[in-house]
Length: 172
Image (tube, rainbow, N blue to C red; front, side):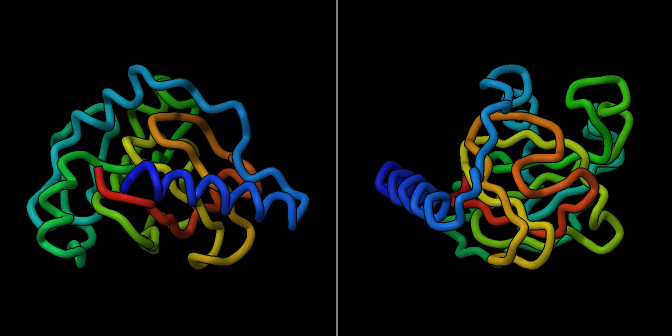
């Protein structure tokens, strides 16, 4: 089923790209490696969809910023985040390690909390692909991101320090 959903999502994005004449996924994402291992190491907080870590390099001080609204069966599957966004860039640099980290668990749309809105500079995705939005979900500018990848903003049509919401295709 996940493969069918991924194939449908890829086909839909390709069709949208043809209709809009805009590439939605840049080819400069980092391949799976230390980044996806970093994301996979982030254990969920019970019942939480969005977790803040004051420093990307540490689990110390993690707090839940948004409770999960997914079904119990889905939230039990979300053992690792689908996406983590970061205050600083370049990803994996000393500056990146010292800035905040927001990790999203589960699937569906999530708003970046107001205190962190328009501040994300880099990202690492886990097992899911999804979409970044500079405004509310489903509006332009937007850019899709692949699973198991890492990069800095700007990404596609979403500039640096402009991320406002995300959509995750499935829970990890």
